[in-house]
Image 1 (cartoon, rainbow, N blue to C red):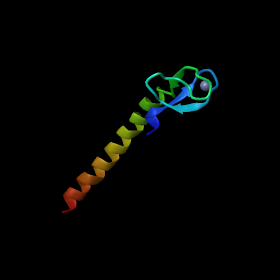
Image 2: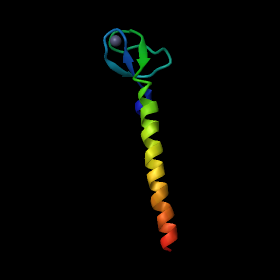
Image 3: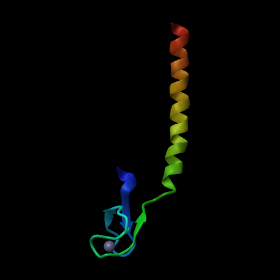
Image 4: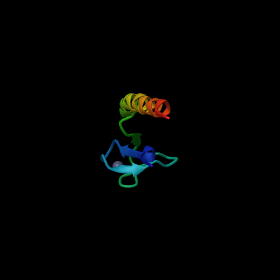
Length: 63
Ligand SMILES: [Zn+2]
């Protein structure tokens, strides 16, 4: 469940998200980790989906 992983802006330690967004190491503010990366993943997922769809269509034609 990496989406619940957050990073402390004070001591740069990783911690699990909690209601107070408080670092368990130093009590600092926890922030979400690398939100822009998700759009990149989605981009590749789109290519993968197109690839699998093509394969799937070919399979249908063969039968
Ligand atoms: Zn901390």
